[in-house]
Amino acid sequence: MNIIRLKLRSARLAARYRRAEDGQALVEFALIMPFLLLLLVGIVEFGRGWNLHQVVTDAAREGARKAVIFNSAITVDSVTTTMKAALARAGVDTTRTDIVIDPGVWNAPSGQPTTVSITLPYRLVFFGALKQWTTGQSTVTLRSSFTMRNE
Image (cartoon, rainbow, N blue to C red; front, side, top):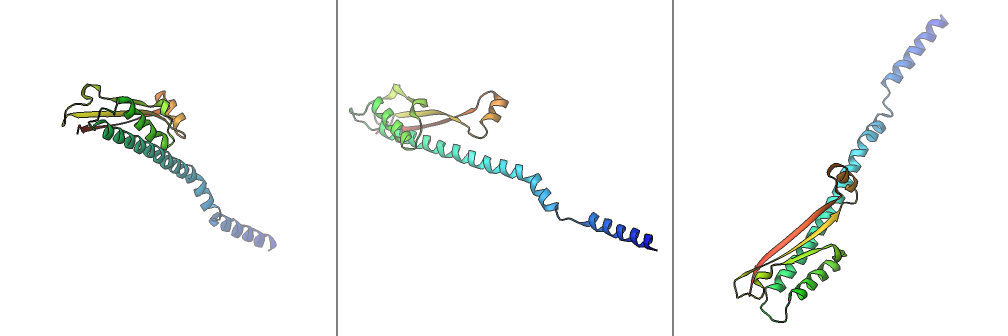
């Protein structure tokens, strides 16, 4: 009789442990957590790149505004200095920028367009190694240009 009770008791314990789901949530969280962290890091990386692109766009806009003013005191160097100052205010290393001002229409008559462009290589911080592994380079080139009519 005791043997039957012991077998019945062990069968009940086994059934209870088979239905137990105490660690299920922890296991599911451990499985999904790397994907959530990857998504979060991607959002931060994209946000940093977008912010830098907005800085480059703002600097190109400021340079274009200054370049189209008909004034003999404004030179290509003064426009470049204005653009580099706008980049430096945001903490961008201005030695890596490539600034091009359309030289063919400098101080042209009113209504003629002038184009100013900036190119800046941006190194991806978190996904740089992945991009290096897949494409062979870890930077993304940020470009912005503006065309305005001379005043």
